[in-house]
Amino acid sequence: MSPLLSVGDTQRMNWSNEEPPEESTEGPFNLSVQERRKRRSTQLLDEYVNNKPKTKKELTTDLQREGIISKEDRRGYTVKEMQKLAGDHGIAISKSEQKKITGWVGEPKGLLQVARERGLIDHNNHHLYSANPKKNPDGTLNDEKSLRSIVGQCTDFQNELTHLQVMANELKVQVMFTPKFHAEMAGEGIEYSWGFAKGSYRRKPLQKKRKRSDFEDLVDECTNVETELTKARIRKFSARARAYLCTYHYLATAEPTAAEPTAAAIQDNDQEKKQKVPMMDEIERLMKKFKTHRCAFDFDRGFVMDHGSLNPTSHTEIREL
Image (cartoon, rainbow, N blue to C red; front, side, top):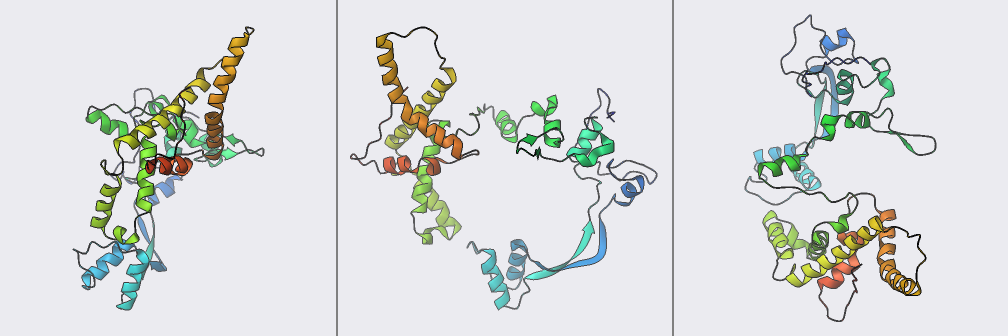
């Protein structure tokens, strides 16, 4: 597991765009010297892939060239609609494409090569490694041979800024991330606002969603602060988010006490439990059901749409913990 790089060296994530000399042995370590030299540049093979469907961009170019649709046409055609248009006018919807072997010059090195250059893997048994963790017989994940886990433990990768953070820094803006899997805690109820806008959009007729200009107008309509995302609704959504924040804070900071509680303390504690149980049950339900990013329109649709109507008869009690 001897590294190819030394302290102070700069590691590049892409191979150089300049093709190395003929006698050079540079290239992916998992290829033989002959294969490295042979596969430097992209090679076209004598074989062809027949009846490969054309992409939407290719169909658009063909239809515009024949004058069937104009460049000013802003209608959002689907692939099936474009294929039907092309077929009706005698334009082929498939093509033959020559097979090729992509060369490594100028291409990204990949996790395996990056880990090898740092001496993080056994290069003699590189076939044992995979990008993601593999499952053990008992169903648990084993990240011992996971390239993502191995490279992710390096200090420079751990401290790497995301694209969003880099863009924010250029704008002199600070990005604050909430804990993962807790969408209901985001901002001042922003997920509820987004969920309400999505629900409002879904109820609109399909005719308003076909053209790009109509779609943009409809989005503006569904996010209008005068008629849709009003101040009253935003305050209700913010209160709901704060209720979750308080519950998570309680769960994170509550510690059992060894002291003998008094009768008054027991009564207060029982009352406090009655207030917390509904929200805690909701959290347990959410945590078991969802493990990725989720939208308030999905996990709390009843609350979003109930308060979206601002019906005085409908009421959801929210208690701060």
